[in-house]
Length: 170
Image (cartoon, rainbow, N blue to C red):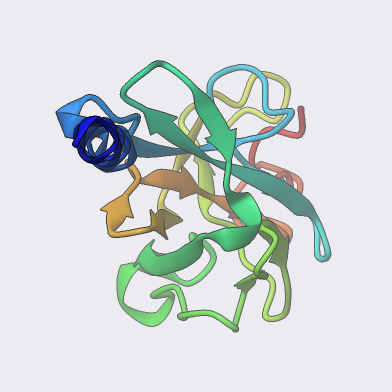
């Protein structure tokens, strides 16, 4: 009889531990960041320019795990190419202008665009603002990240007086 009680107790303990009894470490959120980006903004410069995204699963225990290669990405074109204006220059959906692969590498491709405008009109002190971007949301195990917004300067700007400059380069 003693062995039966011990075995039953061990089975109950094992089942509680394996079910985590509500105390298990679970994903609380997913976040996406651009690696190596400084200055608080993201910009892809030039055709073939790239930015590496990192997708992090944030667990309730505080643990963070890189899940970039296991995430999926939703990309939405917003705004326009400043060279063609809001109507004619609506940004095209990927795989035009921008692609993203399953490792989170974002690459600018043809057709080239300039989604930046100088607020000063002076090439020496341009003061950049963007007219369009690609909003990217990462998805992992039923969680969606906050959006990250990526403007592109892969074409020369046709903005008067700007000598072809399109967006910040650093």
